[in-house]
Amino acid sequence: MAVHITDLPSGAPARRSWMPSTTTQIFIGLIVGVFIGYLWPSSDVNGVHVVGAAEGIKPIADTFLRMIKMIIAPLLFSTLVVGIAGTGDMKAMGRIGLKAIIYFEVATTVALFLGLGLVNVFKPGVGVQVTVTQSITDLASKKPLSGWELLTHLFPTSVVQAMAEGEILQLVVFSIFFGIAVAAIGKKGQPIVDVLESTAQAMFKFTGYVMLFAPLGVMAAIAATVGKMGLAILLTLGKLVLLMYGGLLVFAVVVLGAVSLIIRVPFFAFIKAVREPFLIAFTTASSEAALPKALEVMEKFGCPKNIVGLVLPTGYSFNLDGTTLYLSLASVFVAQLFGVDMTVGQQVFMMLTLMLTSKGVAGVPRAALVVLTATLGQFKLPMEGAAILLAIDQIMDMGRTAVNVMGNCIATAVVARWEGVFDDRQMREFVGKRAA
Image (cartoon, rainbow, N blue to C red; front, side):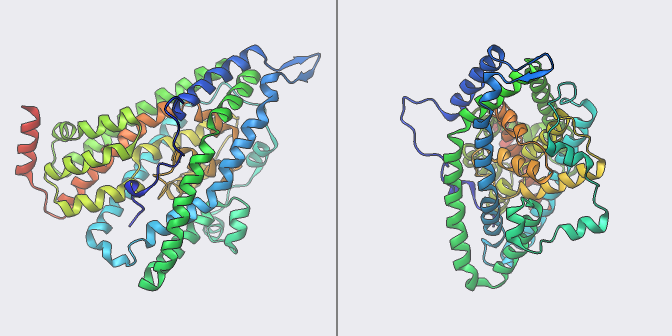
């Protein structure tokens, strides 16, 4: 089974009460960075580019992004292997687990392609472009892989080489096979699971330490961006926020509404049932905080305890609908922002990468940033894009976390109905009591 959110450490060391939270520090860094970029911008004098103070502190942002990149490989490897092999026996998940995984993959795929469609239709990153860099030129000139080349490319000749070269998809494929092999050898594989679980715990803590530098990274990245591109970049980021929330609304109402219709669960009754965990997740931007209430609510809603206990925690690692929708938006947004034209094939390949790399890292502080950074590196897109998006990550995190929780709640009802054990009478009684 996947690593449970509730088993994970907070990720960051305890702070003294007088210090503002990391989120508050990031917002302060954002504001300070905007002022630095506005007051000391770069300029062109007689055809010569003069670097201002804002662009001069960009190495701070580059250093932060290098810190993010150094944690990706060990973090993904340990969390994915533990997530797959953690049960010690693949059969232990049984029929219920298989049905849950099938639904998770369908739901996250829909979320990814919904985000992909929205970002290509509305193009929020078009209009304000950063100066083309070598990495962008490399991507633009890179010939898309054919079907057989793509299949061959998925399998590394050396996992160490895949880690060193940032071939994240190859690392994911190796981790999946390794996790299945560890699970297949039963008790003999338990020491490996224990070591990698400890490694995962250490990497969560490591990530927490790295994220302490996020305010400085955001300040430097935004300062350099505003100093080079002007205040117009803020309007562009605002477009992305609005588009993401619009996409989340479409997913919640249209997609999850259609799912509730298929499983014969009244959608508005479901909304009433999950409103508390939804609001907890939105206001705290924490899936952890909403999990206990979600477990309680779905059991009272008519789902058997054994299904709730398996599907909800597993979904916290494998069914992040809001996060996957955001990742598809954000990755193509970065390409648009830096003036990169990605083919349909490249975008679909990137969606496949996101679908795989987003599994198992739900407990990581700023998990979406880690996954996004890994994906940008895989496709030679500028790392600055991840730092720029970190500035608005808290605003985005509230919405995507709430939809994650909502998606996992309805996934529990889907599996219960699929198993033929959903209690309609209990659902009506519970919703009636909450409406009273």
